[in-house]
Length: 87
Image 1 (cartoon, rainbow, N blue to C red):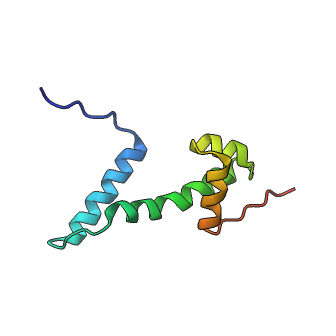
Image 2 (image 1 turned 120 degrees about the vertical axis):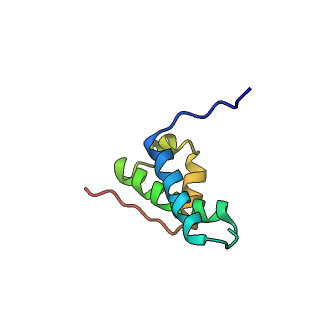
């Protein structure tokens, strides 16, 4: 039985395309710490984007991200993200 492929989404297609380019540019080199590299490249901008969309509302941002407010605040501290909504 052939394994079922997950449904494609624009986000998944973009990620796969970017990973394909990474491996093409890597050539015969060996990838190192790929998971950490992808998380570092995506987590901060994702948090910043959601905070902007929610106008800095932490509860709303945390819910959208599927995180607790405590975890969101920790990640903001780790990435040195400060967000102040405009009046």
